[in-house]
Structure formats: C-alpha cells, structure tokens
Image 1 (cartoon, chains in turn green, red):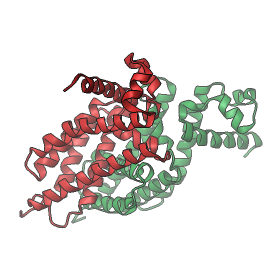
Image 2 (cartoon, chains in turn green, yellow):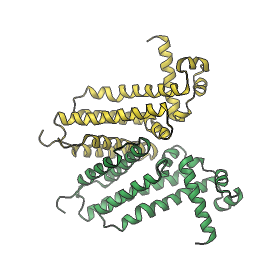
Image 3 (tube, rainbow over the protein chains, first blue to last red):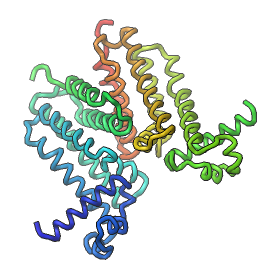
Image 4 (cartoon, chains in turn brown, yellow):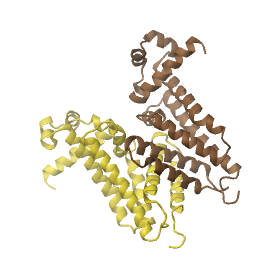
Length: 197
Length: 197
C-alpha cells in the first residue's frame, strides 16, 4: 500500500468514527480537518466535497463490514453453519460499534434527505438484505431449510432479530440480551429446518 | 376536563410532536414557548424544569400508547387473538409516528445520558417488555401457546419484528414491508402454537 493510500485509509477510519458519534450528516470536511490535524485543502484534494467524503466513509464501512462479517462466513459451508456464522459475526460487529453502528443510524438519518448519500445508504441496505436472502436460498439449496421457506421473509426475520438485539444491548442495556438472542436465533432456525434433507 | 387541564394537554401534544422531530433532548421550555405562543413563565408554572417537561411528555406519550395499543387489545380474548390485536395496534401506532416514534428514538438518545429522563424512558421500555411477556404467558394459560414456550424470548421476538418493521417501513421505504411483517408474524405464532390445547 502506497503512502497516499495509507493516509487516505487513516482519514476514512477517523471519518467513520466521527460519523458514528456525530451522525453522517455531522461529518464535514471542516470537522474532519480539525480532528485529523490535516488542512481543509488537503482533504478537499482527497474528497472534493462533503457528499463525496460521506459516500467514501460509507463505502469504507461497507468494506470493513464485508471483511469482518461476510467474507469469513462464506468460508463456512453453505446452509445453517454459514447462517450461524454470519449472525455471530454481525452481532460481534454490532457490539463493537456500540454507541452507534453507522448502518443502523444512517438509514434513519437519511430517510428524508434525498440525494447521492441517501442513494448510497439505501443501496447498501438493499444489498445486505439481498445477501441475507441469498444465504437463506443456499440453505434451501443444500437441503438444510425446507423447500417452502420464503427467503425474503427469513431475511426480514433475521434482520429484525439483530435490530432487536442492538436495541436491547445498546439502548436498554438488557441483562439477558445474549441468551434472548441465542434462543430466538435457535428458534428461528428450528422453524426453517428440513426434517428430511 | 377543566380549562387548565385542557391547556396542559394541548401543550403536551405539541411537546410530543416537537420531541418526535427534534429529539427529546431538543425539547426545551424555550422551544415549546416559541411553538405554542405561550410565555416561558407560563410554561414554567406548568412544568418547573426542562427535565420535568421531558418526563411529562414521555408520560403523555405512554398514556396515548396505552389507550391506542394496549387497552383495546385487553378487550380481545386472551391468547393469540389478543397478541394479534396488540401487534396490529402497535404497527398502526408505529406508522402514525412515521418520521419518529418517540419510544424508539428516546432509548437510543438517552442510553448514555444518566438522569431522571433516562430512568423514565428505560422504565417505560421495561414495562412494555413485561407487558409483552405477560400476554405470552396468558396465551400459555389459555392453552393457545405450548407450555414450553419461553415468554421473555417471545417478547424479544415480537419486539424485534416490530423494530424490523419500523426500519423497513420508515427508513428503507421497503415496498413489501406489510406482507413481510404479516408472514413473519404468522410464522412466529405458528412456532408457538399448541397443537393439542
């Protein structure tokens, strides 16, 4: 990795950290300049505009999410083991960003702000829901899930459980959140499992 | 209802509307004075402090929620019909506050702000989760749910589905959210149902 790329990565890490606490809309080139000690003009050379900075930060977050949550799960056999792995990784990710997962905050923040940032945020969510739908389909394909399982419904159910987990963990500080999540996940899988694969 | 009480209710309605868009922390006596056209001193006579105003607004919201979501469901027979009714009412409530349900926003806003407002917000969430746990227990008591159903897990599952619904509906504007929710709810009930009541 060249020095320029390395610098850009460090800026993006800082940008993501700031966006996670201030909200993505609070992330401006001015704020980032103050926090990194770089000049505004230096940052403009990297990003051109606030909007391009925000989109770069969301793409950076998606890259981290992919490497931490998705890629390791794709190395696990398709079917229930892969779904279990992706869920564990997703929970771990959510816990690490406790105080503000950008993928939960940004859709709410941008739902009423049309523009390129919103388009990027919504496309990422849509890609993620498609990914969850595909892992359900592959669980059907290998015979782990019953043929009548509705994959988009499964994706919605798993997505919802993680949102519930996030709220119980992060906002409510619920003492039993880990056991609740584990039992709810097991029940979700049980409701899909193929008795005669 | 006396004129004083009527005035206070109008103020609380406006306060809740403002808190739902600005965040509860953004609701100050100054903002409320500007928006209602009342004097700050008049509002202080009603609420004494910003904190007391915020708590009054949350209690007002809880009263509305109770009348719209809980009370009509308690008139439905205990068991699955009551759970279905409470879920329908809750979805309706969530849709009406689209742009910001205070019970979803406030726990996130106050998770890191210790004090009386946080205590009130968290106690309300805890009461609500207890209520969901009790309706699951009453479904077991009347023989609709299997005896082995774990009521706190059911409460977590239903709570999670509604959070998923809220995000798909409000933030993501997902075209299939109603069918997804309906199918996921039916599957949840099916996973609990008692085959021989």
